[in-house]
Amino acid sequence: MLESLMPYALFLVGFVILLKGADLMINGASSIAKRLKISPLVIGLTIVAFGTSAPELLVNIVAAVGGSPDLAIGNAIGSNISNILLILGVAGLIYPLTIGHGTVWKEIPFALLGILVVFTMANDVFLDGAASSALSRIDGIILLGFFVIFIYYTYGISRVQGSDDHNGIKLHATSTSILFLILGFAGLGFGSKWVVDGATTIAQNFGLSESMIGLTIVALGTSLPELAATGMAAYRKHSDMAIGNIVGSNIFNTLFVLGTTSVIAPLHFSPSINTDIYINIAATVLLFLAIFITKKNKLERWESAIFLSFYVGYIVYLVMRG
Image (cartoon, rainbow, N blue to C red; front, top):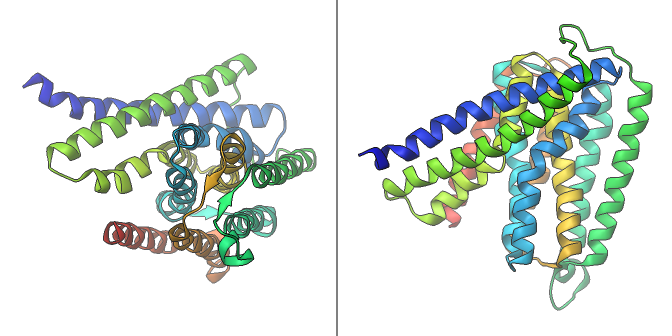
């Protein structure tokens, strides 16, 4: 009896740790931003985005070394899609998100450029008539080069943007803020793993297939840190950090995660993944257009609900595709 209840306990405990980890991380990151007079957007684009993208990086490295290129590429692309449609959908329902001018015209287009570069590099057969398609080590080095440009860009805006969005942020000692960040990242890591492990066991107990679990629970699992961090940022009304985390995570996934993975081991590219890349591109364009539909530079609750409905449709498509 006790053993049968363990997955449920694991799921609940993991979920609580996940939320607390997100809370600590947002507190620590916001305090650092205020103390250093750095825009919360920059913190979201870099520190928070890197921390929440760690699961995707670890999964991809293991997949690349283990000879599972479809998993490696699909994980990064799938996470990008869930980041925009699911996570921004949830965050926008919690609190309508105001999106800065720079994010609209620079960071979101940079994320779009990144996925277009991956599409171009990966489709050797389609675009160049080659015998096979792959993300080679040279491609990986180029992606990492784009990533360096992105980091240089964020360094530049950190020098230009001041502490214009720090109202309501509690200031902690530097050591306390760093401790909050470390504990927050640890909580996101352990919490997301326990939630996924518990949910997977529960799903298996109910007779769901492994493919169904992989396409839904496990795929969502690597995005749980982004979901927790972005949702908490929205709850605390830190729109810049919420948006910065998602856009930054997508840039990290596309340029750093895929770049690092393909440098470690060249990734054979299956043409079927092109459909997911198209959806990734469409979701990014949709985010850009949604900002101008009603109030300029704002993602309203009803728009967020549409994002969520599109994500549900995508999951249904994945299940039908098998």
